[in-house]
Length: 204
Image (cartoon, rainbow, N blue to C red):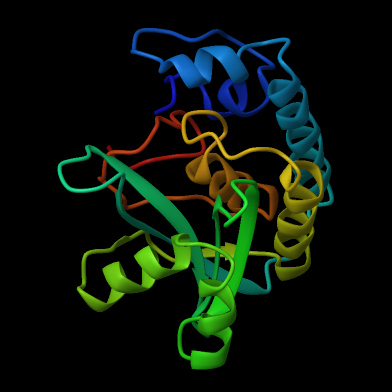
């Protein structure tokens, strides 16, 4: 799990505020605290996000965020993924080698799904949740597709060699980075995720 902060920016980049008020898992404290290597990588993503947003590029596509249960039966936490109108899904999770992996596939294309399945279990769990109608979706948000793809590729370049740690810059952080960096917002979700409060997130 991840610690809640006073704003999404302070969690993502450690640029303002501090961990407040909630329990932070040992994994987060060990690998996500200010000054840690992972926090420095997160700062790189924050800089990319701010750079993409500063371009003020025109919105030309739409994305929504899906939220499903993560961590097995009884877990109070959720996993987030991004989805466009064509059914293309982008999400982050552990690959078969335990490293952070960005999964990109189209839920309507069996070959695309099979390729994603071969990389790790995250897409399997997401597709199962979709099939069982156990996914809550955010409202659609306007994004710039080029900026969105830049954020995804930038995230992948920075993080893909790192070991996956569920409580340190997890899937929710990745999706938030992609959406907000491309000009979108996430509204309409009420599921239990690490907090990304403030101007970026509504729906609690």
